[in-house]
Amino acid sequence: MHELLQLDASEAARRVRDGSVPAEHLAQAALAHARATEPRVNAFLDQDEAFVLEQARAVDRDRAAGKALGLLAGVPVAIKDNIHVLGRPTTCASHMLRGFVAPYDATVTARLKAAGAVIVGKVNLDEFAMGSSCENSALKQTRNPWDASRVPGGSSGGSAACVAARSAFISLGSDTGGSIRLPASFCGVVGYKPSYGRVSRYGLVAFASSLDQVGPFARSVRDIALAMKVMAGRDEMDSTTVSNPGPDYPAALAEDLKGKRVGVVREYFDRVPDRSVAAVCEAAVQRLKALGAAVVEIELPHADFGLHVYYIVASAEASSNLARFDGVRYGLRAAAENGIATYVNSRGEGFGPEVKRRIMLGTYALSAGHYDQFYGRAGRVRTLICRDFAAAFARCDLIASPCAPFAAFAAGAKADPLSMYLCDVYTIPSSLAGLAAMSLPAGFDAQGLPVGLHLAAAPMADDLLLASAHALEQDLLADRTLNLNRLPRGLQG
Ligand code: GLN
Image 1: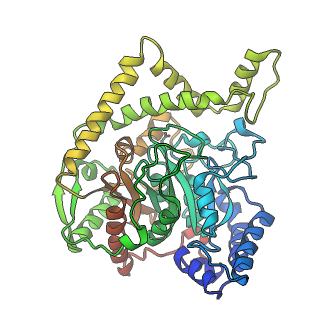
Image 2: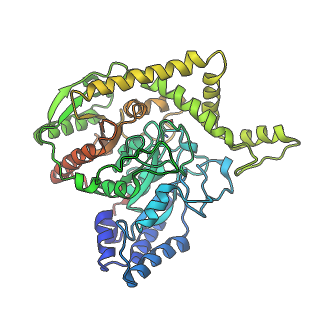
């Protein structure tokens, strides 16, 4: 692997700006590395060398012309394939969007480009972001760079895998109930779900609009802060983005943990079936304490209903959002003798089994006679969960827990939908409440697989969350016995 790929994005951009590394070299290194690792990892759905190199050369030309370069100058960034990049296919890893080419840039894509980032490709996901392992992709099976027999997590599996594999410095994912945090935990990278409303969803193919947030993956918290500085903030095209411009994310990292209160729900640690996963998370909480934080026990009595609420709310919203894929306007159109048959055949052929399951669940939950029993009630329980968090955040600044009950599992190991849904028990409640939340690599389980610590903060407390995670990260990295910076096994030698 080229030594440039060992740098983080902040350092790589600095070198491109000061002229010591041409953006084209960086892009060539990332492309060559992807060629070498993709046969094992399989993260990319679209990678076009000419498109990548042209963007890099444009950065180099700007530099030669004396123009000021942006914060991500020359940095190779991968994009989850449910986020538009002008002129490139958006598939959502579904046959439904076969042949569809994005007619515009998502706001996040446009902001990355304006900051000088080089889009290196579109990466795999569970079909329409529904899943926890990336195995619901209709297009390819992405594998975990730490162990090719295991899944990368999902739904943003390609985004996590390509950053872990060093084929991109930063990637974008989307998180509805855990889709950034779970794969980040499984692949040993940092995954950040901003507070709901921080980052524009314009140009993200909607799954569940009251939950979806776009967020970055990176190998360091400071790279996450950099990406947030570039992407976050009000967008006229997404009315749910907040008007407050938000903090200066990288500058906020200077805060330390002294005097911070970290809330823990005792059972979340006790319940983890794999004790080596629990031990990594417990040890991380002890470190927070050693760094000056106070640990307080909290309760979230309604959070146990999170999974039930989520599968009603998210499926209801999905059934409505996915109604637009009718075989007429986008992508696939199946052969049929009349209009109605066009809809039926196109949706029948285009959507995979998990997407159909969600559409049916959601349509049922919204149907006359069942609406109040399911959707109405789920909304009320969601409010109770939000109130639990509000009460907890009166007593603590952060909440720490395991990100997932286990490390990456073997491909094919979770065949029934319920066992797959249970992967997200720790991530879903914060999604329902719109919190800022993330997975931070905290160590390795008994089998040497990465384990992420889940950290969450109150809505809009992104600066506090990132600063705390940064302080913990520096402490974890300084501990040589953990060897957190080790390369994924699949990339060694
Ligand atoms: N695994 C969850 C689901 O399948 C979450 C997905 C997501 O956050 N996009 O819905």
